[in-house]
Image (cartoon, rainbow, N blue to C red; front, side, top):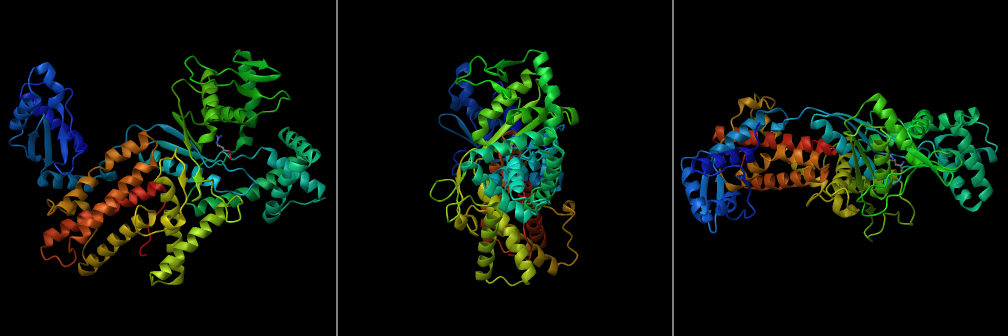
Length: 578
Ligand code: ARG
């Protein structure tokens, strides 16, 4: 389906051409003066110089050519030479009818690429904390957008499962004489204790480091404990992510990169990409024109140990071997920016991935408390993810009780959980990922304003109108949009809603191109506002003109479909009632 703006631009090009002008630079944009017109074309201004004519005169000639247009209801020139345009109601209604009948509402997916999204990145055996919230939420949205836009997409959790935390746990178990496998509860006690201890007790820390090293070199006893810790932690992680409506196709971790490290390192040495520097093995990744110095990428420490960069590079070796991705997107804290510059450059330089592979880093900002500092618990500690979700859930549950929601307890709980998830995710995703934001539980859980619950409320409202309509018209079927005819809009509110709905496909294109879920949020907020304004001006259920009523019902179904598709891309869903 052609984009609305392309159709309009095409029409203007023809008019410029018919008036004898070049058409290369002619395009139509959304008006920046919505009080004057809906769209505008500034082409006459650009042509004035070479045509040796006043832009106003050119615009006049073009407007004359637009005379019989069925697309525009208004085309007028204003000084010094702008063309102001409104589209005709008939044209818009036809466009919207087509959109309603199209799969994906007219969005046409391109030829799909193979995409891997690396997100989540939890560290096994440590509790998930709020630092991991953004990685999960943004990554999941990016993955869903990638899939919607036609890409063959895999999400890889890339767990931190190979580091010192394992050595610390095993060291404390040994010291306590624990000769059986720990439970999850024990684990959540052992890790913090061991971590605290290592800060005060140098010998203990060294012991933990030795154990980590032995584990990484295949010590059988430690490997067995490690495998057990992995098993119980992974099921716990799965449960945590399930609550967030986040899931991964690939459950690999840093440990899975291990077998690829040795061959990768010898290849780097053999081809002369890696060299020794102060006992360590490094790859130079500085490039001419760098505005600040990019230090060499460390591959092996002087004791031969691998580092974070090493596992990330070896993981790319594995991904290349298993999937040959066209694009790999890393959704990680923006403070790891330099790490990824080094990894990407080293991967290209050493031929680990082909030159044309698109390696992208989507670095996100920090989630702050109302004091503007990184979010903490009331007592000042690191907030566990579980606690945060519970808090938001409780707030939503209370709000529903206050609002006098009448439904069975089970449904109330389920609904509160859905609203809570929308509050958390929308609160996060409506900000540009790269920026820090303030987690404000009162604001996020409000049913009014630019919030997740407001979007859900709008969808629920539409569902309830559709239910009423169906009660009165038992034969009404909502699945075959082709049997509905959308009539030209009856007032400005309806027209605004239609124009916003017509913007779905280009919005999706932008959200994918810029890896920007916040664009989807801005779009659905606009759609919800337009819809609610329309709703307040329209008596749908009591309308006597059946064609008119059916047309509105079709518009509602389209609005609902677009809103639901969008929130699904953001990773949450709407309840039936709230
Ligand atoms: N586990 C890491 C951390 O907590 C994040 C991993 C991100 N992904 C990656 N491929 N490096 O900081």
